[in-house]
Image (cartoon, rainbow, N blue to C red; front, side, top):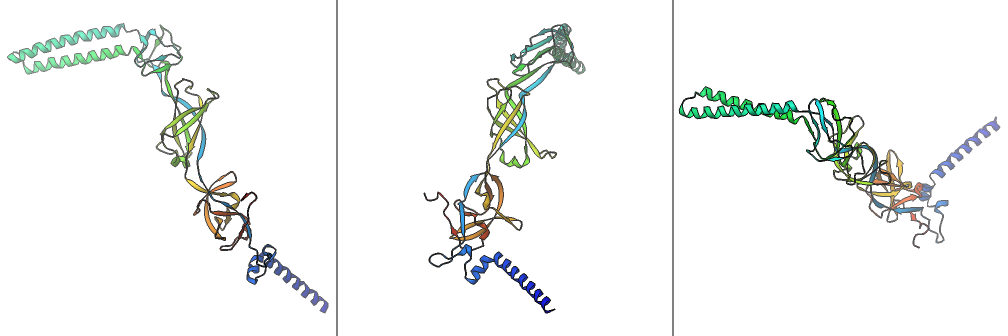
Length: 367
């Protein structure tokens, strides 16, 4: 029985010693400072003084958080219409040629208009007669030979005749198709002698001096983009070429389905190398604010917050930060840091608020 108790006691003592050793190893730095002794990390130097924890630091840099986004959109002519006849009839003249540039007001197509011309001549004759009667009754009115009612009747008749003439002239005008603006005509399947109606598509007309491209951007970028910003674009329709343009319009609302807003980009097409309907890859540079930049290894996370260790007058100082963006081994952060502040990125496991440290010189420093 005594032998069993002795074994039990030995096991208990061993467990206590193991727990104590583990605690001492975990809190070795604190115990060393409290007891005034040095462990392997705080071994005495030649002069007998305790050695401080060694760290490597990097200076804070300030960088601008510029972004460049690349989006794809379809090109549209700055003005584009599908030409249609304004009346029904037989084509007697057709000057449309695919690819030809037409000026505003130039005649593109004419329909047979014999009846419309006769209607105009008849309306002109009726108006002239109505005006002659109106003037004669007006002279009689001054002598008292015509009543006021008669005068009103002839004046109304003259006004109606004038309106009928306008209507006849408009019907005649509708028999001629004019270019609504300067543009390039597309293909047409019509020929002289064909019958068309108001629903017949004659040809397309595009003003492609400027090509507009509409693209969608995420709502998070709305505050970074201004109207007039410069962009660049490429298209498979003109391989190897880069076209410069500007942002000419930003939509007034965000689409709640995809949380994006529409942007219209204008690409000058002075050399007529671009075509409506082509696919464009648009690159937009988005300037941003300036932020401190630190090594990615320097950013620590604990208890739901991010922080870095800054060395000030040889002492460690904990600084809470917010991550903005990662960038090639570095991190853009937001926090109370200034350019040139020394931030620890090696030796972080021994950092404590206010602890004195030794900043080691990195290879190449001071050379």
